[in-house]
Length: 69
Image (spheres, rainbow, N blue to C red):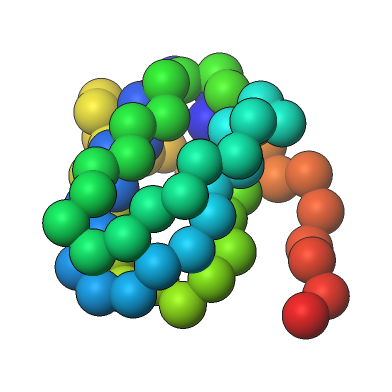
């Protein structure tokens, strides 16, 4: 996302976040902040809440690819 920061609060589970090719382990109770313009994705069994600031707008989203599981 070019415009918004993403803030994720992990409610349940655990997994790995990849932000700009750096890996970070995350588990319930953690907060993950991804600044605007950074490439990111995550894997694992996570139940999480996402907040964007400013509000998310589709026109600023950049989708790179779908991952096959």
